[in-house]
Figure 1 (cartoon, rainbow, N blue to C red):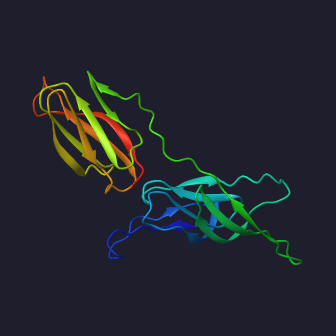
Figure 2 (cartoon, rainbow, N blue to C red):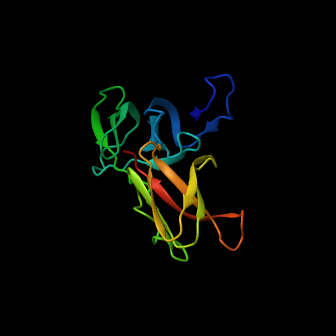
Figure 3 (cartoon, one colour):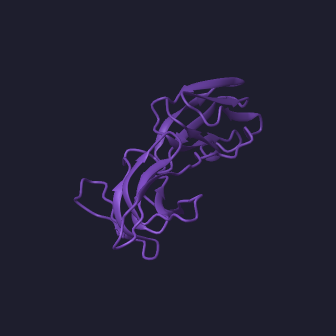
Length: 200
C-alpha cells in the first residue's frame, strides 16, 4: 500500500510513501482536515497514523486483548472521542468471516514544558484552548508565534512588566512556537518555547 499526497487539488503529487511490510491495502481514512489522521485496510493488526495533516506517516499497532483474535481486513474506520474505532473482519477461508469492533486509544500531543521561557518570561496555559498568556519583564519585547511550517500566525509586542493575553481560538489544533526578541541582541528572534493549541 502507499499514500500519495497533493496540496493543490491534484495538479502535482508528492513522492509516494510506501508501506511494504505492514500495510497491504488502504481502504479507509479519517477526515483530512484534522491534525491527526488514521488510515487502514488490509494488514496484520496495523494502522497508519499521521499527526501533521498527512505530511508524514507512521505505522502503529492495534492491540487485541483477546489473543485469539487478529485484525486482517478492516471494513470501516472513524474517530470516536478517544481514538480510532474500526470494524475488522477476521477471515477463515473458506468457512466463515466473523467481524468485530475494535476501539484504539491514542494520546493527545503533550508538550513537556516547565512554564519558563527565559529570564522572567513564560507562557501559559499549555496546552491552550482559547487564550494564551505571554509574560515578560523586559522592556517592550517583540514576539512572534509560528506554526510547524514556519508561518507567522501572530506577532506583536509584550510591554514592560506586562502579561499579554492573546485570543488563539481561531488557530487550528497543533504545536506552535513562541519566538521573542532578546533585549541584548536587537532584531534577533530566538525560540523561547512552544505550546499546543487544542482548539476552541
